[in-house]
Length: 156
Image (cartoon, rainbow, N blue to C red):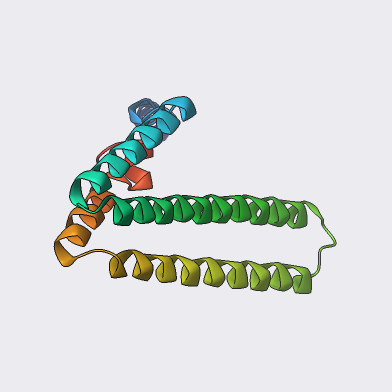
């Protein structure tokens, strides 16, 4: 009898803990709000570049590189989505062979490495067209304001 009472109490405590922890979770971010924040932040970044880089022609060239960066990152996000979908299709196929997974992962790694090299090369081009002080101001903004996790989930 005492054992049944103890088990019941343990169950109630576990259930209460689960309910409380689930209710404490943040709600899913609103995609439209996240997109608005990203757009606003990118606009602020362009304004910062114009204010920081005194030469209008260099500022315009730098802004073109920012747009190239955004296209590169968008392409990488799309490739990740395609990869995730391909993994899901393989997972759903009971008869999928290990070699299919290995080929898919190898292709993803090649794609990721290419995107990484492209982003590093682009960053080096950005650095080369700015002074140290200009780069510190712009890259500081990028680190502070363009962090995807922060844009989506807020400050931790």
